[in-house]
Image 1 (cartoon, rainbow, N blue to C red):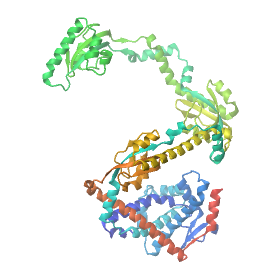
Image 2: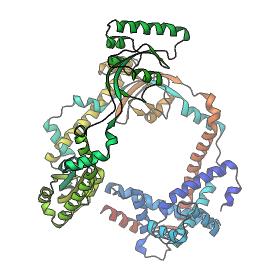
Image 3: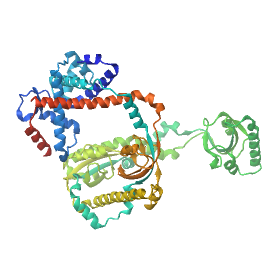
Image 4: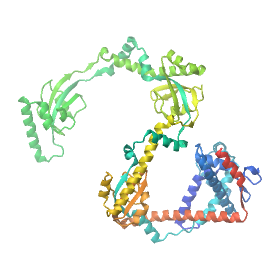
Length: 637
């Protein structure tokens, strides 16, 4: 089979290689129990026969599970979804049959090479077998037979995809299509912004509910009781003795030593990035400011007016408390040599000229115990609070498991928080714990009287017990009134947006395309887009995909009403910009590959359809509609 690759042009080999990689990645969706089953199986499990191979009910079941990934299949989709999967399974098997009939071979060596290319294919034999049986649910021979069948099918598809030609005209047309741009004046009608104009009456809301009862349900929910260990509250309950505090202080004195520090302020006249001939003038200004300060001028006022230090100028030059190592050398040497209230001479640093004043000074010292006692107590509580929380939560969980009805008494006994919460639905917020998906999911899995494991939510530990489960049911008006009011308002807002947009569109046709006048008539503003292409976006609206038909229209064309992302849009094309052909050469190769891929995919589908039609006509494909109908009925039920 793989000789096909060696005999073709390089571009075709690259294309087919990419297609084979895609097939290999998708292949696992079809490696299912029952694949490769012969026609001799029980007839009530055989959906279709392709030659001597059978497509079975377990095969389609597994495909449905793979596609849904544990989500429930909506009943209204069963009639179309299941037959589509049946047809896909038949198509795969038909291609494999045709490949075998055409004489293609998948040797054991080729099969082994393909399997090794898969993520699990290079595992040791025992792990490989375990993976196939446990993860895929089939035996190794079944899996390898499926892989061989896929090899036949791939070979047939590759025949259809070879020889695809894209003409220079097609490539240039595609480039122009992607890069031609238009500019629009437009008015956007956003229903969410029209909601304020909607005032539904109680009668309107009730009528809306009655018309749409089927859409209003109350999901399954649970009544729960919680015992909560809150970090802050547990910490408050932990007693720390004076002896413990003294012992901690004695062994951690270095933590409470403060170095010499001082409170200072300064004025900076910057020389950074200034011409050399300006430096003398800047220095002269600094000397003048120093003279004013020593003559009694207000330091803070001069700093606010003259200092060029962005961090301190607005604060009158105040630097706060500083210690050694925070400043450049000249500044640090000067400031630590000053006495409180003393003003320095003009000090030069790499940043410019400074005038410095020390306001307060503190020598290095050991903070006394009385000053840090509260701080140490908090530290000691923090060291034990997590162990204490866990111990309390474990004890609460053990007692609650024995007596689920005694949650309140257990919480009181252990000095923990007791909370009741009714009608907690999937994804809903939980009192005291908030919107925690993992905690909610754990609670949703519990049955009445069942106690959860210890759950962590933020800085809290919780144990939950379910006291009641309320099944999902059609909502009464009282349960759905708020939702019905919002839904009715949203629907009316959409209708209002449609009415206003139609009015504007009609007006544009009458007034010769005067967008500003039309916008004024509905109290909205006109916006002008950038030049946009078919694959870009318009601010406030989104993707230009909804404008595809407008890109070939002339300037002055009225566009809309059109709807995108729930926003209705009316506008006018005001300018066009042709594709920049200067970039065509560098993008041509990628365009050719993409267009070939699109054509190859179309040819493969047509080829596949022709094979299935021919095999059906020859009696090689037989579908058992009664089995398919039973499968559909089972999913509906």
